[in-house]
Image (cartoon, one colour):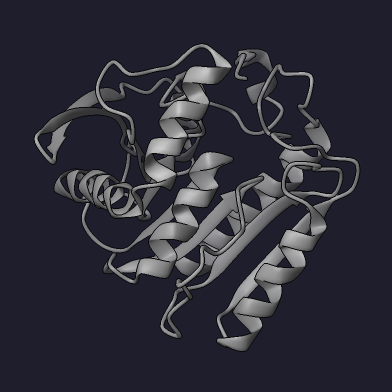
Length: 245
């Protein structure tokens, strides 16, 4: 699903050279490998990035580097396990199914990544994710288990709430960036999430980008929509500026 075209990044913001590093950590007896990109100056806060169904690839690395260029410490977490980066569609579906059917494990591995990130960057954090990673972000938000979280953001992510789950009233602000032409996650899903968040009086914002399909932020793919990508990144930038003061 991902093909990173580095030349397109410059359209979003100038990038400096970053000496990010791969970081191995453990959860439930298994090894995981994330990626840390630290701000070159005083950090404005921590942003945790959750990958889509490909696993942690160059796409999340580039997004983390972009965030470091904006003055944030950024940690891309790994939910699959070190070296597990599926290539075939069937394998990707299998990996996400494992976590969708074992949501306790999904939460545990997210929290393990968050804990590792906080060893390298203290203070409040915003958690964001793409596609499957967006669904994982909302899973964490509903759990209420993560502390010192200033906000959650999902880009073309799954929005459905599993039976028996709900959002605590104490949930921090949520940003949803969604493609109006997304046939995988429809506007019905968007409307249902809005009803849930309204009912619990959670501070949220939903941005819908006309003509943008599912995965509209993936550089170089047929689904990439530059305008929607830039607009959603701008909305996310404002979200960070507001919630990581």
